[in-house]
Length: 324
Image (cartoon, rainbow, N blue to C red; front, side):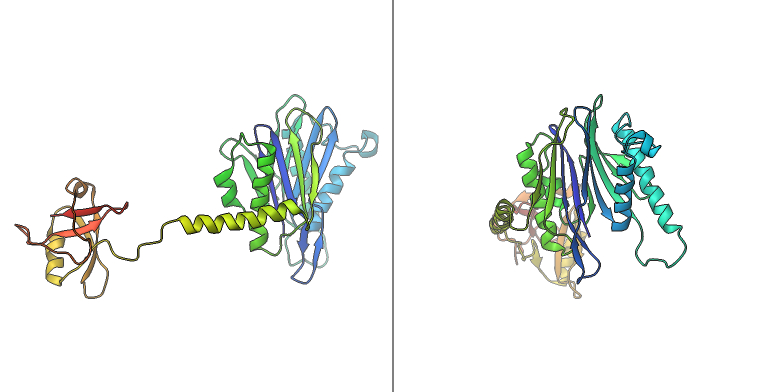
């Protein structure tokens, strides 16, 4: 499988991909999934792939061939398209073409689909840095303020940290740390994603490739981030309050239950078959009649004029409440 992330920042674009492919648990290989094209001073393009390896390699090979001089190819090139949008269209059309060609061939039919998904990002002079997610059908969507990053492959494990910690104003150094945490979570949860990782940092308006690096299995910084994150999570978990297993209510008789159900403003639900344990859910009107009380919320009853019972409970913040 695969995990790739493209992140859009105020400073530019950040790309990271793993390199593991597998055909079953006993056939694991390393293949590059990040590819770049450049016309220095005019454009920088980065592409990451997930899905059927034969499909993605065919797409990249066609894009490379079509980036040759015009007399050698005769088809549109991503190195000549006037904008990142037009490049995204070319990549989408190429992906759709490859999938249609593979599915239309006669002969044995593969058990696995020929589908693939692509993250494409970069900048062409005259435009801003842009990031796209391209689907197997050839259509695509673009990253925006509300959706500033894209993931492909095994996306679910590494998404929570991205959602919680992403900031468009973060520095490249912080963004790399964030992506490493996202990949570490994915590596811990899924064996089909693995090191080495490929990384590319594109700085806006430079129109050339930025820092490119491979993070190997023995990378000291990644190991420090992984172990440190685990320790911090355990520390944070220990500081959170424990769940209160006691009911914010009372254990009372069936007769008292009937009286409580008849009282205005409270909505009660039975918690056992006999109807002896009840929990109160306050309506908006009942909240206006809730007052603080100094008695224990458990096993407490007192006489009141009218229905003859008083119910004690707690609100969501643990404050002691009383309803008459």
